[in-house]
Length: 157
Image (cartoon, rainbow, N blue to C red; front, side, top):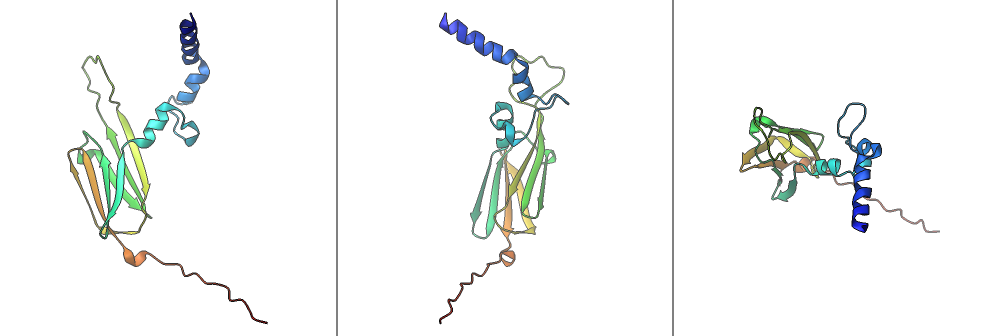
């Protein structure tokens, strides 16, 4: 009987208006996308798509991005003031088919990363292989500035 009561309580939570207001923006029916809803499982997953690794090798920054099933025509890459932006769209829905299971969502994504160093835009190159987008960016060491640190000299009296 206790298990049935717990199940009914959980079922009522999903039927409440408050639950659905948390998931959907009432004004336009879109999923809410802000940090205040990070506990929401629908929006929390969006932060991690696509997953990336950024590392330094020699004088290059290398970014590897998981984008299975996408072609180069489905992806846009831009860099502006050390902010690298990757946008694209996963298109998995096929019309005129009867789905029995549909776990892969049609969705647009936008991933923004702050690069740790300035780069030389003209030498940036990318390649797509086996669902991994690799972007290689030459670090612009001339643009890295060291800030001098001065110490106050105590005056002797």
